[in-house]
Image 1 (cartoon, helix red, strand yellow):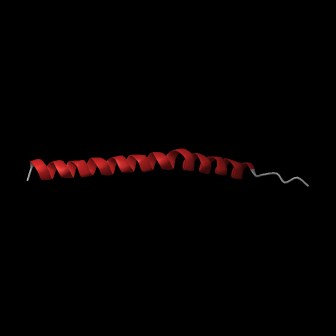
Image 2: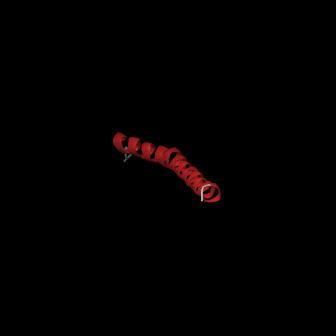
Image 3: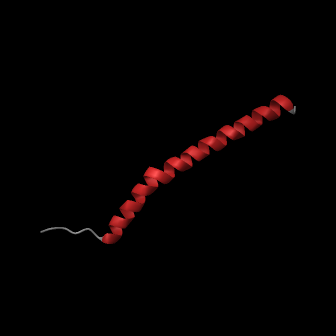
Length: 50
């Protein structure tokens, strides 16, 4: 007997795969960039405005 997949679960797995392959790495990259900018701002503040 062949088992058919539920179309909703297929959509869900496609959405999960897209989320894991595109959205999560993009968010992690943006977070890393934001931390670098924040630390740079702190360094500039300490060096020039203390």
